[in-house]
Amino acid sequence: MKCSQGGNFSKGELQRFGNIELNPSAGVLNYGQGLFEGLKAYRKEDGNILLFRPEENALRMRQGAERMCMPAPTVDQFVEAVKETVLANKRWVPPPGKGSLYIRPLLMGSGAVLGLAPAPEYTFLIYVSPVGNYFKEGVAPINLIVEHELHRATPGGTGGVKTIGNYAAVLKAQSAAKAKGYSDVLYLDCVHKKYLEEVSSCNIFVVKGNVISTPAIKGTILPGITRKSIIDVARSQGIQVEERFVPVDELLDADEVFCTGTAVVVSPVGSITYKGKRVSYGVDGFGAVAQQLYSVLTRLQMGLIDDKMNWTVELS
Ligand code: PMP
Image (cartoon, rainbow, N blue to C red; front, side):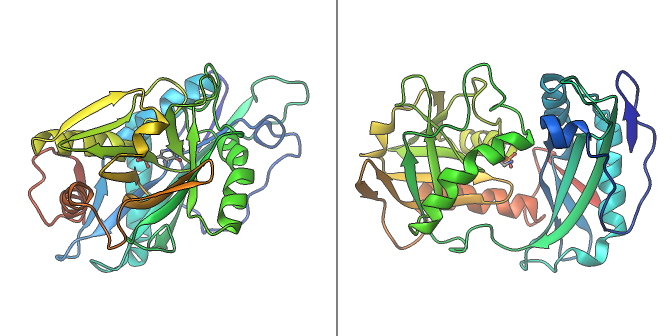
């Protein structure tokens, strides 16, 4: 789908996956004017396909587009395009229990612009790929390292939107962490350098007793759709959830730590290394709280329990 600055997106068309043409001075290539989304389609036992809260992705893309000076598809246009793309690629949705179809909507400044300015033209596209687990550990605990020098977001910056440059900013710390055997990096706020923010591609929760705490949304972390859903699921199960500033020290005596995201779903954290000190949370798999939340969320997403929240969209 294409659109000029200040205009509306017209209906798009299905195309075979392949290279796309871009002008060398496209806004996205020169000034990073790009946003993406990520969501998944699961196959049910009866063969139908379930999308999980696609309108939330549409809304988040619209908020991000406002920050990045880009026009965005309407919620209806976005959701319809996702449905159409998934239905056209139905055969790539894995059987129940064997993974999911990852859906990647992309919005970019595709028009040519030489001096720094918003691009004159925009392209919205969606591509898909079947996926399994995000971390090589699968659903086994992941090992994180706290990064205290490099930051992924600053107050007033773009950390709260899903813009492409945020991911370039984490590559250095993430690659160094992976080379040392860690699964990913946990970032701290860049002002006080002591409050938890998030992991390169997921949100974080800390469990202590019957309370789970997660960093509040304040512009520097991504408002994860899984995060929001897990908060609602936890509260519906009688678990108290606090959204607040979470000091890194709380990791030291937490009962459990887990991450949430479309790709990682709910991933238990087995250990966190901070300033050379390693804190472990058990090695056998999920802690009780993460296990409970993982189980409810994944059964909902796969259509194995009643969707009382009305979160899934069924396609046949
Ligand atoms: N934080 C970052 C930086 C991410 O890239 C993601 C993945 N989209 C998340 C958090 C989790 O968001 P969601 O639950 O919407 O996938």
